[in-house]
Length: 198
Image 1 (cartoon, rainbow, N blue to C red):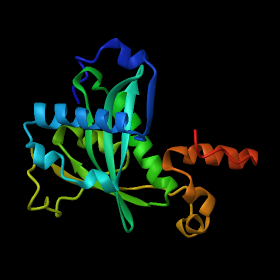
Image 2: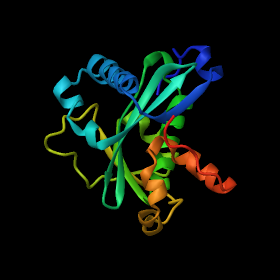
Image 3: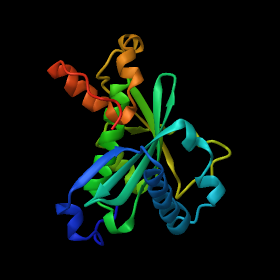
Image 4: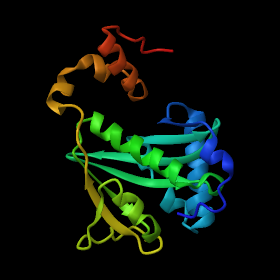
């Protein structure tokens, strides 16, 4: 990942990562993906915006309040698929990438997932390896997928932070929107139930 053009505010600015929760966040995430995948990598719009966003968790990184990067997580039985990682050139840095990846993996762990997969371009393989992912050389890309710069299928393990059987029985947590799960955990520790609505 080329960080030579990243402004100094990326290293010193306030970095916030969270789950997309309103239309403004959705538009920001989509705009970032359009700039990076369609504009920089010359992907077709129909390939990038494939309809899977409606059944996924979108995550957005902001630096000093400005949208900087995004990642999409799709949930399958037994594993999470991390995909569509995009960071705007002005914010492209190890700091923003790490924050997005760590947030997505921590969120998957909160849901009880123990495995994840995704595709990586060659320049990001080592970045994903820092999170325990390894290339899966015997797994080809999907036939409908147009590879970007010789994409590589990767997978890794996650240490779940909850028991999915217990989570299934915790209707209080299941009732609360995902972006408030951390708040619920903090309140549980203090024995105070947070308000679900803002």
